[in-house]
Amino acid sequence: MASADGVERVKVALAAGELPELDGAAGLRIGAPIARPTAVLCIGQNYAAHAAESGDAPPEVPILFFKHPNTVVGPQDDVAIPPNAQTVDWEVELGVVIGTRARYLASDEEALACVAGFVVSNDLSERDYQTKHSGGQWSKGKCAETFNPLGPELVTADEVEVHSLRMWSKVNGEGRQDSSTADMIFPVAEIVRHLSQYLVLEPGDLINTGTPQGVALSGRFPYLVADDVMEIGIEGLGTQRQRLVPATI
Image 1 (tube, rainbow, N blue to C red):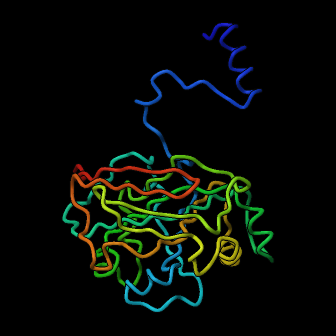
Image 2: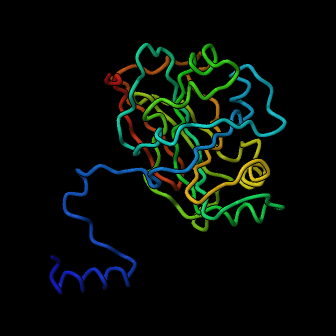
Image 3: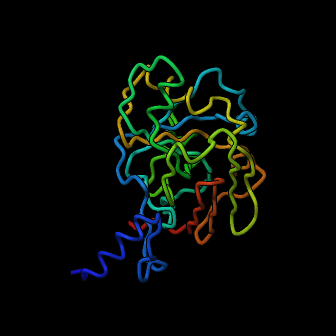
């Protein structure tokens, strides 16, 4: 049980806007800011240069696909490569976390009012599963366990200018993606408003808003293998680091 002096120190720190670092914090696991969203909704090819490196024209309306909620893990957790997977790819993305229920929104202003905040999201993909095994849908390549590291923190909407954030990724210390959310085809407000016409967004739901150019699918870089290390980050939202490991069976 905490002492009276200890409780008082915490109260003073809270009042001052400061908290002491927890003993041993550096060695503790960091979990995802949202543990089990009702849904993980993803927008495909939302950066024109990424659509081009995928061999497609920029979409005229937002492309929607889903990930299983249990893909969400912490920002430093290992990422497990599925058995027989040969084409695992990284994707730094701006994650949008819904704060209030959103349905049939009429304006971008209403849409932004439903956003709790923003987070760094790594929308990992297995490209052969996504395309060759897909049957016309993408989710087979998106739903493997651990395929959505999230965090390290959820930054509230009033703390960040979301339309001009630098975003980047590295593999084994070598640069891959380097872009900005300013290059989005469909901005955050439009995505939220658009989705609300087709489904009800619930508090805690995650929307991955697309990735810029510089992924392995482009043919310019090798796909990920065991012991590779990914690092991704977004200005003002923090950084992630994951090691690739074989999935246990």
